[in-house]
Image 1: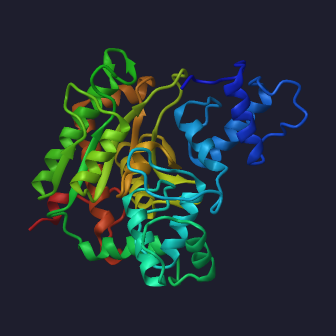
Image 2: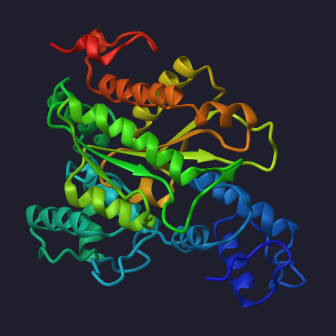
Length: 372
């Protein structure tokens, strides 16, 4: 779709304004021209993006438009079913998924996408409640869902399942399945500065991390090769196809200001849902990297970017400094620094699986010392 920004005019802008008004972010009733992307519209878009875990830029591209389209749906507004050629998505789907999880049916997360797992969970509910198990959420199924209270108590259902799954997998990394996602690639070189490109840096970092993981018996996959790229959807699909336990997406950042510097980490979190284990891993990775490198701490953030949202396992994106910062760039150019980053990420993954009683302080753990 066409990128919409302040100053744009036309029917597409009018549609965006109507959607913002329908969710209470914009007063569209007194507008002289509803087809103008004015200052109030940009502010409303920014508020919406912040609320939904989308990059806050005030622009309406594909991601923001899809989120706006889904935001006005409420459970019961339409019949929900799995459609293989065009998956239904929206807040009504997320509400259905949340209800199913609260009733004890297993779903990875309430991501608002009516996929096969959602259809299977709905059919199990229908079968147990004596309804036709057709995987279609119509009036009869809605009545049944509203009549039942939640079965899972003591915390958020998916949080309980995630904690148990990590604990049951044991502390050893042997046999764990991890997808490494070096950002960009192919014709997309990412951020470029002073002869360095983001795509080359993160490929090198991913390769160093892969060697350390493989030495500990971890099965690893790359989402791309050294000279090609892949879309966010393709990267997420690969992780889902191999049944990964974790996804680590590596990037470096850039800014118009050379003063921007430091490390930030991101996990799936937007709207009413979040990846608890993803947040924990993002926090561990951030603390380990800051402690080991001395780089600035730009904190961890919940986002609903496609790779984080479409993966069925915890996925974390790590921004390993600003290539546009002279200080960060000098570090990223240095091979021993890249080894330090790889070690920090390896330790963060290991700490995710350690019992609380065995978890060492940040910045002190050395994986070779734990072997044998």
